[in-house]
Length: 117
Image 1 (cartoon, rainbow, N blue to C red):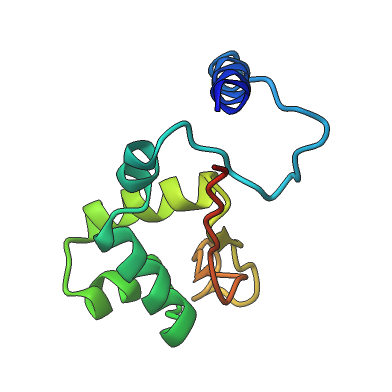
Image 2: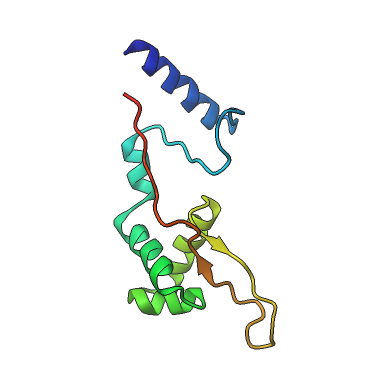
């Protein structure tokens, strides 16, 4: 048990310093506690991920409409989720009406959580 706690503490210190272990997958996120995970993956953010995956809205504005939420808040949450790698925002350049639009896309069918005991 102590060895696991020591390892967890070492990993947490590395993450705090912005370091990544070469054994870690580039598309894997690490959280130091379940509380930290729940701060990032709130129920409202999970709802956005599910809506994006299912409905594939053409823009963040369309997503806000689908979710029945304020555009400013949805925009901030979408950009946070994109920075963390939960979704992609690829700017469209085809056609004058679509240029600059960033339709959100979730490239995964599921998110898995692994807890080491």
